[in-house]
Image (cartoon, rainbow, N blue to C red; front, top):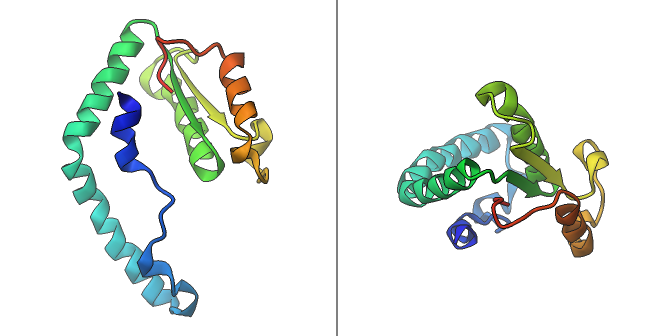
Amino acid sequence: MISLLLEKFMSGKVNSQTIHLHKMSALEIVQMMNDDDKNVAESVKQSLPEIVKAVQLIADCLRKGGRLFYVGEGTSGRLGVMDASGCPPTFGVSSEMVHGIIAGGVTAQTDEIAGAEDDQGAGETAMQNVGVNKQDVV
């Protein structure tokens, strides 16, 4: 269910506005970024019903003793680890409730690990090592 909701938010698409980024002045780049940032709030607003569904599903899993796992690679993986590590002091939850897992392991938090995101076996092993079960949210 959650994976179906998240398909709408998948990234990795080419932004046609940035194809000529290397030919733009610093001012043009900053203006473009500022203009593009205006789209974020509107996109979130349009997606509120789906976001609420995801929040409710995750909250239900956590109330039933499940855990939340952020899993990613590169910058998204680093942000997941950072957000997960901020949950205990910010929200007073157990450090066992929210976890961040990054492709390439701990080293990838500060260094690029080429090809780590393509190693499906490593991802499966990471999930097995933390004992992911049907109560958890990944």
